[in-house]
Length: 163
Image (cartoon, rainbow, N blue to C red):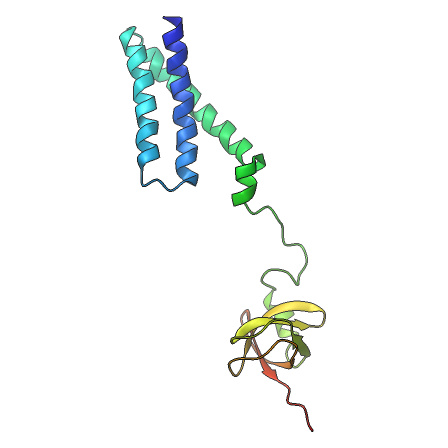
């Protein structure tokens, strides 16, 4: 009898783990069905020993504890590190800069550090900023000037060299 009840507790733990897996792996509900089967199997074992009330209480304790442990441990696991972004944006020039910073760039000159088709990266005042070219395609290494800032969109114009 004890062996079967341990198996039922294991099925409850497996149920919690499968719920976590369902959040990560797209399975169209198949993992959820397996999770419900584990829960039902564990409750069935308790039912066979006329302990269904105890089984429900044990499931109500074990499954949430398993979920809690899995969610706490997942970010430190190899799989968790592969799918969770852990870097914080600390420097104002990274990520999406604030609007005041972008407006301060109006009229400043910079250079394209990537090909702009028409969106690309420019370096302006030592900061890498995503910009939109005023006119289509611009090669890398071309000098540009900021002509417009709309929200977080910075529009630049190629500075034509006088020959």
